[in-house]
Length: 351
Image 1 (cartoon, rainbow, N blue to C red):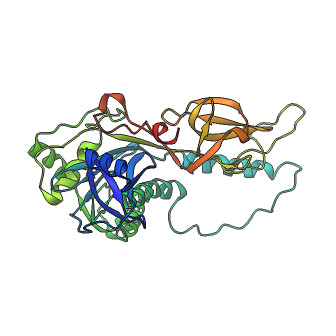
Image 2 (cartoon, rainbow, N blue to C red):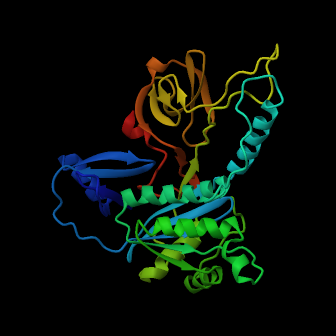
Image 3 (cartoon, rainbow, N blue to C red):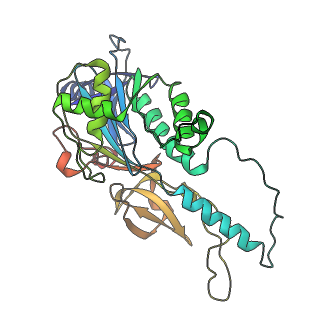
């Protein structure tokens, strides 16, 4: 297996083997650390060579799950499966209903504004494509990426030029994504039938279980897309995957949807919990490595990184040691773990 490497200025270099990384750490030439679930090393001296090989990222968009694969001509460095952001549309609808309801109650509120042109992208569409862009930004800081290959998704059209140019939020959203992604590297697209032909060429099959946390669910398409740019590997070097789930932060709301006893509506939402930013990784004497959730009175809740399950609601802020901020939780399914790749063992470094 390969370990990502960065220099003293956090600039990504070519990954190295796990044995060499262990030797560097033992000799004091490198410092180990985790970056959003991926084990890395930072060189403590000037690298002997800064030459890099082409590293390609294949992207397989989806409605529920998405796949990313980082590939060079000779190696498969990392496979990532992410959960798509699909809750923004419902949240915007709920916010609109709450705002309209407040105008009929005897409570201070702003006057209704005239209709204004929203412009740009609908919130739900932008959130979906922004999530993909955030993952690409993160990968760009881990590997010396040169290009991105994306499976081009399309919506049904009517065959009319003016209608088809901007009729669908999907079409508008992906054009925005391609434009932003081009700032990180070269961008190429392939149609769905081309991806299927590449799978047959390499003798790979895609699973029909789209929500399964396996390589064949989505990462297989991402791998063939990335490998098609270089045509260096005949089959994936490793099929271990890293699963990412974005954390959902409830922004500040003036009132809850339903009042408490006595007709009192308590404030709800926010992104701070007693001095901690929600999603922050903290070390607790009892619960170990966790991330911060909400709070109640003078106690905060702690959650498991892999599953998101709430471990406790009674953690004292002074008992939690801040480690880093993270806006998603991550895990490596046991069925896909291989020797040298265990994304869930972040605690072994921090504890």
